[in-house]
Length: 366
Image 1: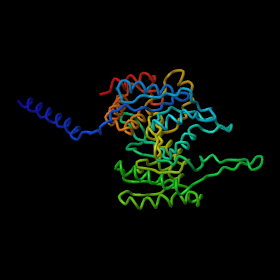
Image 2: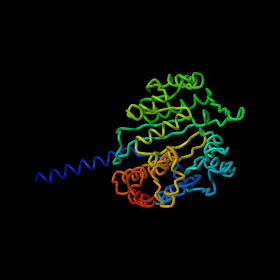
Image 3: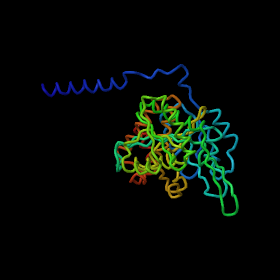
């Protein structure tokens, strides 16, 4: 009798739990289910492997997305083809693998060209602990928002005299204010409690001073969000010592690149951190932190690249496209695979192939 009552109680609790998770439904607007075309750039190195993973999972989910694919885009090109720019302008959204930027040689980065051409002024990288993936630190949940169009990446370099090169760092009030506004708006919309501005204004008093001044002005408009500032070198030390003190971080261009990679390494590695770049009209989603492994040919030959970061980035893209249930299904499935630990690529301590991860994610889809 007691056992029967316990089973009845357990059944009731489980039923209540299921009911509570769907107590408020997503009500789409008429036409929200219309399939969307998205520009797809496989890119270089591991790029085709991980973008193919996204294609397979989307196909298995019957996601309302179809891809306009550009297989012939590579990082050693001098200029982005106009057809690609036109595609992203028409589709508004793009997902891409890594594009390898040659070191030196005077070849302009295609990644930078994309950001400037489409005014993708905000880069967002989400660094967080994944359940089942062991890391030194716990409770890491950091969002790094980086100004994407100016600073040290302005590309204004010249040789003054032989042996002397001048590189200009450009900081403007307009770009500083809009990235600060985006960071606070993100925090407000995502129930985040704190925004930290990263700087080096103790040395670069005018340039980083202007960035801080802009952040302070925007902070006054969001009194419910705590605002703080930290010098970039101390920031890196604090990240590796006590990362859970950070929530949303807003940075100029170069610092954001460094900080997001440090945060990603702390939270589980660059192979699992999602991200994207967004402007007023367009968004490009890609692996969140460094694509430094894009050129690792051993991964390409063995077909053992980690697709998790781009799969999670594609879940971000699905939410951006207002397909929340598909995003939830994909994210939940990826997290299940990580938590179970049966299939992991080499960077996560396993030996699984890209395809084995893809198959496991598809098998875990609700």
